Each structure stands twice: as structure tokens, then as C-alpha cells.
Image 1 (cartoon, rainbow, N blue to C red):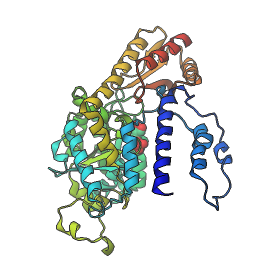
Image 2 (cartoon, protein in one colour; image 1 turned 90 degrees about the horizontal axis):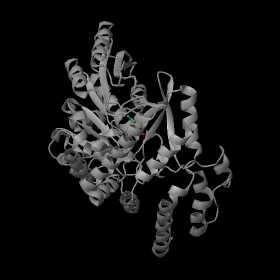
Image 3 (cartoon, protein in one colour; image 1 turned 120 degrees about the horizontal axis):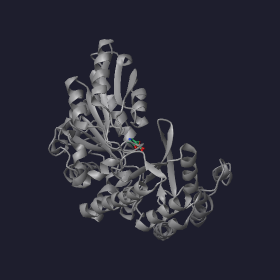
Image 4 (cartoon, rainbow, N blue to C red; image 1 turned 90 degrees about the vertical axis):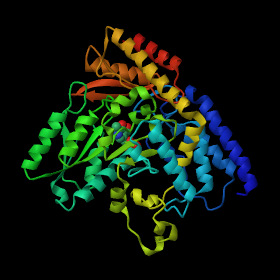
Amino acid sequence: MSSEEFRRHGKALIDWIADYWDTVADRPILPDVNPGDIRAMLPDHAPEAPEPFEQVMADLDRVVLPGVTHWQSPGWFAYFPANASFPAILGELAAAGLAQQGMLWQTSPATTEIESAVLDWLVDLMGLPTSWKTSEGPGGGVLQMSASDSTHTAIAVARMGAAGRADPSSMVVYTSQQAHSSIEKGARVAGVGHVRSIECDEVYAMRPEALEAAIVADRADGLEPMLVSASIGTTGTTAVDPVGPIGEIAHRHGLWFHVDAAYAGSAMICAEFRHHLSGIELADSYTFNPHKWLLTNFDCSVFWVADRRTLIESLSILPPYLRNTASETGEVIDYRDWHVPLGRRFRALKLWFVLRSYGAEGLRDHIRRHVALAQQLTARVKESPVLHLVAPTTFGLVSFAHVDGPEATRALGATINASGWAHVTMSALDDEPYIRVSIGSTLTERRHVDRLWELIASSV
Ligand code: PLP
């Protein structure tokens, strides 16, 4: 493809994406396909001869769109949002166009320095400890693909730190019964022997006294308590674990303290949510996902550590082919030492585009708009004689069930999803099903939540 053709097709593709966003609200959210349908539209072998690019583009409509779930629909209330925005999409395109490989400072100084600057900005914007800024230290931030990667890295680094004291099979990771499965997966990946799911209170937050009792009991049994992971915004109900008390217990017993704020971390851009961070200065590591609720398309997960030396010392391996003068000065960041992969793309560019295009004000509006809609829906659920909240609404998630029990709740969830234009996720607490309405899509406005409520009210 010549640069002239690239310009032509590029314009057509941007038009295609803009058309997609203009029409996504009118599309049924779930694709009407069976397993294998999309693959059946593809030939068995890659083409031997080059195909005209117009034909490739045409297959976006013919092959791809029929098999796409419309996460960007304003009626998307399922899981958590996976925000995207035009500035982020353009940042992604620019990153692909520059095609950088930023494993070392030397292999792409801009990839490294824009990333560390943008993550330092976020520390200030979100009221996090300034010692997490790479420019101040001893902490620092790095972008990972996902919160799972951030958590797995934290567990692996903590495990390496504890390796001199005990065998990994005797190590224990603690988290709450409501924590995301990535904690358990990270423990498995790191070869940690035990994971304890600590009991929660009536609002599904970890009970610190149960945590401490478990640590003491495990130590008495000859095990090696190694890491505690607290959640700010659990997946099920956005419960917030008491970060300060849990951090104090972790420190008193010499455990690594990780905080998973994958979804709710974006809300910290608004000062009124920062009381949930109380005690965060005790954290050894923290993760949140701009790719959930901060207008930056997947993948973009921030991972901060309170002391970057521990991370770097655990992950740095220096073969002769990676030696270079910039690294030897000790004055540069080589992000390859901050995560598992060696190679890394220019992920920060889209986040930089988003922060500059919306400004902190625009991002606060984005969060507050959704939280206000969630509060409005919560008030309606509370007033309804046939619905009840199953957990407090703390951010953009409303969790509720039908008073008539599991069957009625499941039927209501099915009715909402059968509408085609609204989509929710069902979950369960103590084996009782409930409906999660997660308000946070980039395009979701009051009228969409009003329409959802009309559907709910007319179906119960
Ligand atoms: N932690 C929490 C609390 C989550 O809700 C999620 C996903 O929803 C994750 C971690 C995993 O995020 P990721 O898909 O970025 O690995």
C-alpha cells in the first residue's frame, strides 16, 4: 500500500468508525450469531494473492459487525464499562502509526517519558501519594495491559521478596470473598500455595478483624502470610474494603499490601470519592484501569508501586544485547524491568490524548454524570414496592433484585436483555441472583437510563 493509498483508505476508515459511533445506539447490543458462524465466513486459507483494500474494508461490515457485541452502546449496562472516546482512538492510531517498541528508554525515549509524566499527572489528579510519582519517588507508575497483569506482577514481586524466608508452597495470599478472580489467578501463576478469602461485612467489605485472625492462625500453623489485596470497588457490588485498617494489619505482620481499584479508581479524579482512599499511603502497590471508566479504550491499566527499586530488582535481567549507555547512566527508566514482557507499545499516547482533550474538568464531568444517573436509578429502585437494593450504590453500579425472589429477578434480567437495546449482567450474592446495572458507557445519557427504568417499571 502506497502512502497515497494509505491516506485514502485511512480517511475512509475514520469515516467508517465515526459512522459506527453515530449508529451504535440503534444496533442490537448482542450479535445474533452461533459459535462458528463468523469463522464460517472466512476462507480456510490465507489469500495467496494480495486483495484490494476496499475488499478488506468491506468485510468490516460483512464479517466483523455481525459478530460484534456493542460495548459502546449507550444501553450498555453490563459488567463494567469499557470506555472509549475519539481522542483515545486517535491516540491508538498515532501509536500504531509510530510503531514504537519502548522496552528501553533508548529504544523510544518519548514512549517512556510521556508514560511516566502522564502517570505522575494522574497521581496529582487523583490525590494519591506523591511519593508514587516517578519524578519524586521512591515509587513510580507503569502502564500494563490489564489490572490482572498489575495484580499478578504485585504478587510475583512480593513472592520473590519473601522467597528467602519460606517456600512458595507455604505462602498465603489474603483477599476478600468479594475480590476479583485475578487475585487468585495471580497467586496460582506465582506458585503461591494458599489463598484465603476473608469474610465480608453486611456491605460486602472485608472484615479487618477476620483478616488478622486468619494471618495469626496461618502463622501458628507454620505457613508464611505474604500479601493482602484489598479492593476499592469490588466487581460484584463496588464494595470498598477499609484500606487503612487492612494496610495497618498488613504492615504489622510484614505483608505486601496491594490495592485493586480496577473500576472505581477512575472516580478518584473527583475529590468527593477520595475518602475511600484513606490509608492508601500504606499500599505497596495499586492498580486502576483507565480502560474501564476513564474514556481510554482497552488496553490501559495503571500500576503504581510505592518503591520502584523492589519491582526493578525483582524483574531486571540484563543480557548483553540489551546493554546500552543510557541505561548504564542509571538516569533513565527502562520499563522492560517494570513488568513481565520485554517489548512494549506506546500505550501512554492515547491516555495523554484523553487527559489533554477532556482536561481534568471534562473527566470529572464524565464520572459525575454517571454517578448522578446511578443515584437517580437507586432512588427509583428504593421507591419501588417490588424491587430492593442488595448493596449500596457507591459509584456507577446499581445492584438490585425483585422482592418475589430468584425467579422474578432472573425473569426481569432476561426481559431487560431481550429488549436488545439495553444489556445488564446478572450476578449472585449468597446464591441469591441480582441484577447489576452498571452506568458508565461514554454515550450513556439520562434519557437512556430513563428508558431503562421505563422498561423495568413496565416489566415488574
Ligand atoms: N479487579 C476488579 C475489581 C475488576 O472488576 C476487574 C474486572 O472487571 C479486574 C480486576 C480485572 O480487570 P482486567 O480485565 O483489566 O484484568
